[in-house]
Length: 368
Image 1 (cartoon, rainbow, N blue to C red):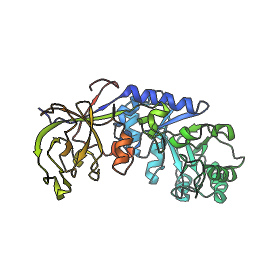
Image 2: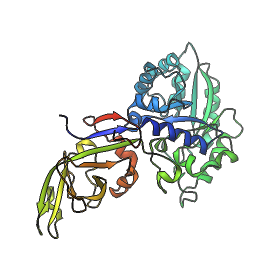
Image 3: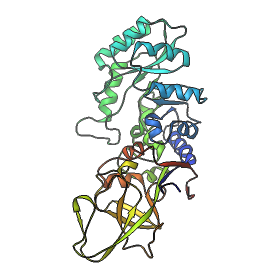
């Protein structure tokens, strides 16, 4: 028998969350972001779950080619663009859109002859300070791209740093929009501004300026970029991680648990050993008190997470046993809640799911 830990991917929830994104941005086309192996869900599963998206966006050129080989015929966007001039002909051959965020990429396009033109997303740095041309340099970059025979449509793109917070003390979304409008001005082409935070927290953005494309990521997988719970936005979990109790220990006052002996029992207690550790993708830094559900009852993690196992408090559980079912996150325990307890974000937990964890597909609410 295989080790009793498995993740269930809920394609029906992925479809539902995509529909929710459209309700928040009804006038925009949707790039469903599937980078990092579909946020740990599997690239081909993400392709099926977001089959109704207008396009798929990711950062890996090989992932884009994999999507084409799997049968995706709608647009694909490389969010970081191409990394070498040798990649440019591949974009034309497979009809892949590319971000352009630096002058070196512009030069590569100028020097490469393509048998058919490609569409690009010209990125503006409006304060995120990762990728993109600054507003004062943006029009010049656009002019050079527009003069290249191998470039067809140019979409104007930026990325919000703090879209989940309307009045951030250092950089507001209004200031980023102002910079974007200053840099893009009256330049022809569609606009693409909103990530998940922009879609969820700035639903009226499309009323202020054209927002032809949105780029939701984490919300499509049932998480949020901050603030309220995903369920408050009508979002459903798309990944459920389950395991079982594989050992039970009876402790007395003063007994310790796990590496470092960090947890000390304050009295008689029962602890259960769960077949899940950081080599499965569970965060090693998750502290005592991180929520876990055993046989339908909420309890907590105790002791340090090790490579293959973790220990949980079984005192709230009636008649715990070897084989008791353990819910680590997902359907019934929001991944954002677990992540918050561990001092991280749901994105990291999804993306960290290890290859050794069995993955199945099942509808939300089923046993997987």
